[in-house]
Image (cartoon, rainbow, N blue to C red; front, side, top):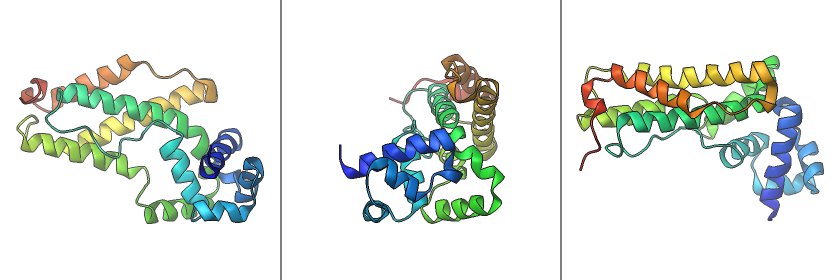
Length: 200
């Protein structure tokens, strides 16, 4: 395992046990067995480390949808919902502590914007996928892609929060049937064409 991976593993463990707000570069370096200077050979700043933990030590967030026209719209929405549920349930313990520290939250938000990341990217990715399906005629052209995307992403985040609230970081994963039911309900709002088979 290389230095970069060791740093990410150490950062992920500290973030899980203490939260992002208290995962300092000094602690991350110590846990990884390196100097702080070594961290900056691989990452530009602490937020870059956080971003890479989220990208490479968590289920993939849905900042890009599946290939338009492949599978059915319902199947694709179910896959995105499942990804969102998994991502939010695992990332909540890492990011929750930021909410109690407005200055730290502001710094984190600014850095995520610089890196082209952040929670709004998921909604944009889903909406972009739906608009592509509209162009293919598989989603009603009058359907509001942004609203449907917000409903899918917001429901997944809320469900993840409820599971974490009830059982903490050891909560069992959300059932896949939850993702499937959410996708089925949203598909009905996208018009009858969304129930069709993949394009040949």
